[in-house]
Length: 126
Image (cartoon, rainbow, N blue to C red; front, side, top):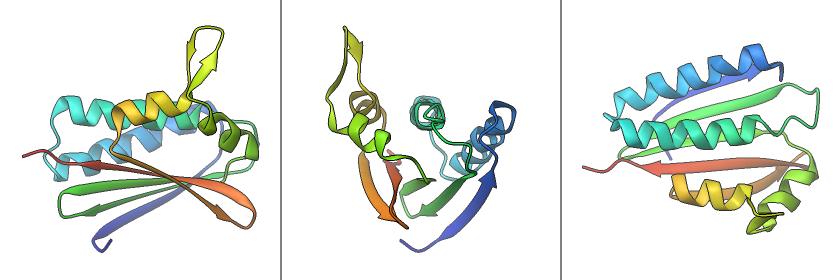
C-alpha cells in the first residue's frame, strides 16, 4: 500500500491508549468513513489494545491508501495468536477473531522479531 502513514509508539498504560483512538479517528475522517465504519475500526482497535499481556511499548501504524485504511499493531505475545486461532472465547464468550472478523474486512498476523503483529484493513464504502 502506498499513501499517508502515521506511526505511534505508546506505553501500554490505559491512559495512553486513547491517543491511538484519536489518531485512527482523525485519519478515518480523511476517508470520509461513515460513523458505523469508524465505530467498527474503533471496536477492533479497542479489542486489540486490551490484549496487554506485556509492559512493552505498542506501536500503532495507520495507513490510508485509496479506499482502504490499514491499522498495524504490535508487538504482542504469542497468546494473541492462540486467541485469534479460536473462533469463540469459550464459556459462551465471543472470541477475539469473531469480533475482528465482524468489524474489519481483513486480518493478517505477521511475525517481526519473533513476536506477532496484527494488520487490520477496512474498505471505505461509497
